[in-house]
Amino acid sequence: MKISMILMMLAFFTGALAQPENRPVSDQRGAQGQFKIDGDKNIYMLTYFRQRYPTRIEIDSTGKIIEVPLPDPMLIAKLHIALSIDGRNWTALNDGNPVWDNWMRDPYVRRGPDGLWRILSTGGGGRGANRELGPSCTYITSKDLIHFQVEGPLPLMKDVRNDEGRLAGNIWAPEWFYDEKAQEYMLFWSSSFQDAGWKESRIWYCKTRDWKTFTPAKPLFEPPYSVIDGTLLEYEGVYYLFHKEEEFGEKTGERRAIRLATSKALEGPYMIIEGPLNKGQIVPVITEGPTVEKDPVKPGWLLYYDYCMTNRFGVSYSPDLINWSVEEDVSFPSEARHGCVSILKPEEAKKLMEAYPGKQSDE
Image 1 (cartoon, rainbow, N blue to C red):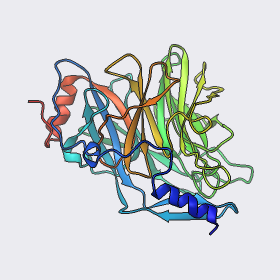
Image 2: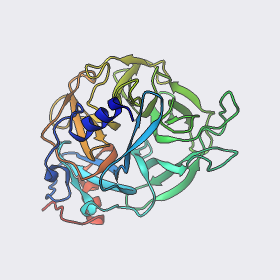
Image 3: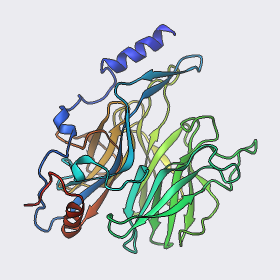
Image 4: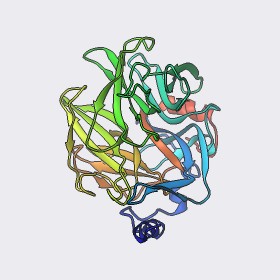
C-alpha cells in the first residue's frame, strides 16, 4: 500500500477530515428525552433506518479498491420514526426501535396529494435479482403510518440497457415528486451499469399517474461526477436537486458530500451550483442522504444529511436555499441513516406516539 493511502486512512481515524466536531453521545440518542406537543404547532417527523458501516471503501492511485474496517458494525434496515418541534432536536418513537418489522433501507416517506403515504425504499431487488427485468425498489403505502401495505417491487430500469446490452445493477435511494401542473408523479433514483453501484452512477427518472404503469426510464441528471441520493424541492418556480457527489480516492481526493443543482423545469436540464466547500459542495464530507424542509423556527430552510462513516446525523440552515451553514446545537437518534423529513398535525403525532409508546410523552 502506498504511503499516500496510509496517510489518507490515518487522517480519517484522527478526525482530520473536514467535518464538524463530534457531538457528545447523548446528543445523538434522541430517544432518551421527553417529547411534548406544543399546542397546535405542526410537528416535524424524521423517518430513517439505522446503520454503522462495516467498512469504508478507498481507492489508491492505481485504481485498486481497499476496504478499511470500521468499528462495531450494525444494520437495522427497518423503518424508524422520530419527532421534533424545532427541526433540530429529535425524539425517537418506540424507544428507538423499528415501528414496522419489514426490510426497509433509504426510506422515502411522503404524503401524496390524495392523503396516502407513499413509501419508496432501496431493497426490492439488487444486482442479479431478475435477469430479464433488472433490479427493483420497494413500493409501500400507508394511510396512517401505523398500518402498512407492501404494494410490490418496481423494476424501474427494466427497459434500459447500456451499449453492451447489460441491465443496470442497482436502483438506489428512490424518491418521488408530485408534479401539480401535470398531475402526475415523477419517480427518480440512482443507477449504475458498473460492477458497483457507486461507480459512474447517474440520476434516472420515470413518470406515473396510477402507480401501476410507468414511463420508460430516462436520465435526469448526468454531472461530470458519479452521483447518488437525489432529492427534489420546488420553490417559486425553481427546482432544487440536492444530491451526493460520489467521488473519492487518491486521484480525486475525498469528495463524498452533498451538492446542489437547479432548474426551471422539473425534467431539467439541471445546472450545478458551485458551493463554497471542497470545490463546489455545500456541506462537509463524508455526508449523504439529503432531505430538505422549511425551518420551523425562523424564515429559511433546513437541509438534513448523515455523516455515514462516523454514525451521526447533521443539519444545515439556509435563508435562501443556496448559502448553507452547519447547525451545531442539534440532537438526533443514534445511528440514524438516510432520513426523510415530513410535517404532521399535532393530532397525527399523538396517534403515532400512542401507537409507538416509549419514554416520550406529551404530558
